[in-house]
Image (cartoon, rainbow, N blue to C red; front, side, top):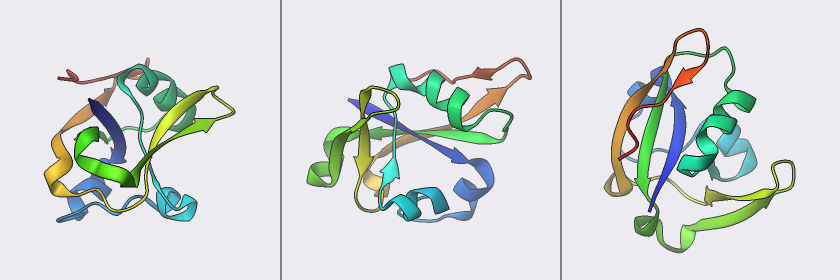
Length: 110
């Protein structure tokens, strides 16, 4: 199963090796991910008006026990949270997310 991490392009391009998360991730103590069905709402709620975003696809099975599915009471569903760094080995691809001014256009998710 693929899960997805939304990352600012400049931050993504500045990192090398394993990804340790955004300032928000580090403050919360885990890396925030979304499933494919959660992406559009996550973008709308937390990234409105932003551009230059990347979408990173990750093999959830490769994350082992560091990946926890936890309930978001505000959204009423479980989200994948990674308690540790995102290893290069678990990453499948990174593609730009387009913001055309009317909303986000996600890349092909496979």
